[in-house]
Image (cartoon, rainbow, N blue to C red; front, side, top):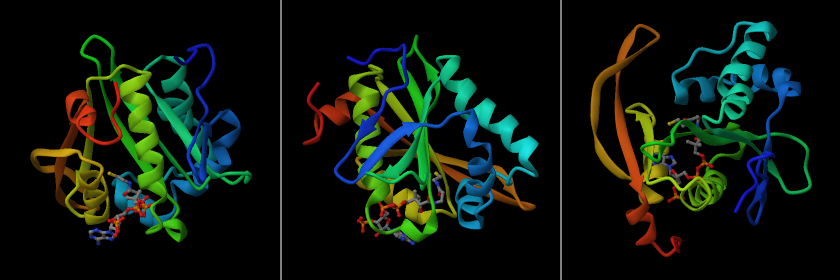
Length: 191
Ligand SMILES: CC(C)(COP(=O)(O)OP(=O)(O)OC[C@H]1O[C@@H](n2cnc3c(N)ncnc32)[C@H](O)[C@@H]1OP(=O)(O)O)[C@@H](O)C(=O)NCCC(=O)NCCS
């Protein structure tokens, strides 16, 4: 079991998943201003470093300190550059559920990096956080992410019609989930 006193560091064949700290404000500004990441997530980029600091606090560092989730920075093993992030938010301990988010610099897309990171993080969710349900919401304009999440074994539950307004246009959002019993039924699940 993981000690909750310190941020859990995870690794996979190619990757290290490490804490993102308050020192990462410049990284946050750069990373969440990359147009492909902005487009995939549907959030506008932070407008400056102060806004990046505030979002970093709210969505990553404060989230962890409040016990509401984890957001790992993704690095290649032996490298210091953070190429993406992945993690849980909206962790509801009473109902044993959380939501998942992820993003990767476009130069690394299509090499199975996020598949590898998500498999590890999903395992952490079921084994260490003892979740029963993991939810992911994907915009209809993001087929790559929908393919990825379905490939991992998430079931599509339905569509929230015109849920978001992105650059003046309403966008449908698809809701996916994986339950502990789904995961136990896959080759990866063993709890
Ligand atoms: C979504 C994202 C994380 C995927 O990362 P990645 O490392 O490229 O993902 P992987 O390579 O592990 O898997 C992508 C899969 O989508 C497939 N794919 C690529 N383009 C596709 C498309 N247009 N339609 C359907 N599937 C597509 C790939 O073939 C691959 O599947 P495969 O392994 O069966 O071949 C990355 O594109 C990203 O960061 N996007 C911007 C942020 C974002 O959208 N975050 C998610 C918000 S819900």
